[in-house]
Image (cartoon, rainbow, N blue to C red; front, top):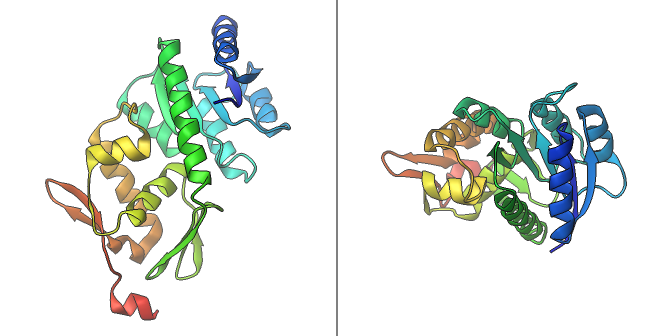
Length: 236
């Protein structure tokens, strides 16, 4: 596996170490030492296949950079691993909320980071191969275009919320435990608690409005996406 990795990191020694290890693993690299140059580097040709993003940068925060990346069509789908010395659960939740795909806490093992990079790239490649449009009652999802509609009105979701909804829809009628969702949506290495799953499901339901009823809560077990929409929804 190869690809272009953008490292946005203000610690020069760490950036150099990451660049060396990435090149040793067969990746091409692009390095930026602050947020503004990082955003410019993300928009440059060719676009990066993955971004390693430090949270604490001298000009823009990593969360702000990630938010801007997710707002632009050109960078919306690029996987982002957020790296930070802040390891509190709330910091991780905020990182995922703005669209980060994974989160590692400093100091971290470079080898662990390489494994996470490869896992994210495999998942991104698998998702690209799945391009499809699916309809369920009042809900329509275009996997390739990363778009969702409820009653033909488009709904804006973060990258993580989109993956969560797509996972539910692709497993209609099947129980999904919180642990399974953490593994399959966040990635098996994602170090967050199962409460994070509940928070994201709640916000996903709020965003998709009446279609949120398709996601059922099974108390003490997890969640299940209905196997069939209601007749009224099918006729709508």
